[in-house]
Image 1 (tube, rainbow, N blue to C red):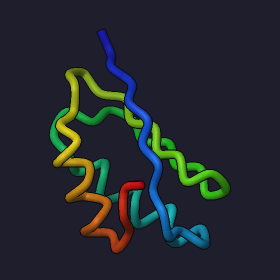
Image 2 (image 1 turned 120 degrees about the vertical axis):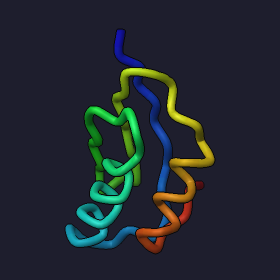
Image 3 (image 1 turned 180 degrees about the horizontal axis):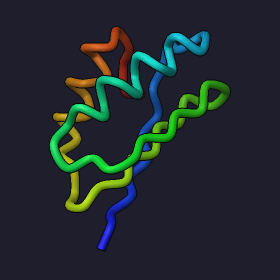
Image 4 (image 1 turned 30 degrees about the horizontal axis):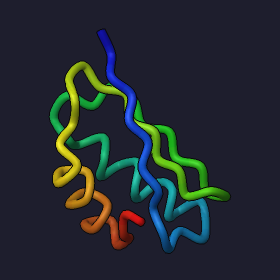
Length: 68
């Protein structure tokens, strides 16, 4: 059964920001889908198993942004 987690990312200002965050988060093992909403900063991750928040934080920071 799929798990869904939503995080808030700060600092995104454009479509390129969304792409960067999406690409980095998709690299996390087990991630099936990533939906990033620029206007709210919401990042919704669907995965087969729960994803460690530290992994999400690291991926978002790698893209150049921060988890709120």
